[in-house]
Length: 116
Image (cartoon, helix red, strand yellow):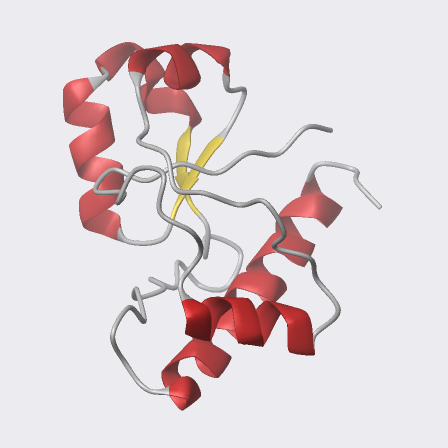
């Protein structure tokens, strides 16, 4: 399974947000070498599944890339369609909450997809 990340409003080539990096490192994840990139048509075509954090992102991508509509899903789908709000420029507590939501959602997606 190959997983990658891109944003629809990414600050291209910028490093990971300091608060996000601290949260990841505190939970044993590496963010070394990460830099932001913009989602584009090539990434859309190459992806088997595209997970977004908020409903507006799903609607936007389905509108811009109608052929990909069937593979654009909400990350929080298995958490009662939870929308996960971007914690950018918010408190460390907001980053902690979002980390927990993302990690929980990713584990559920992994289970559904037969991952480990």
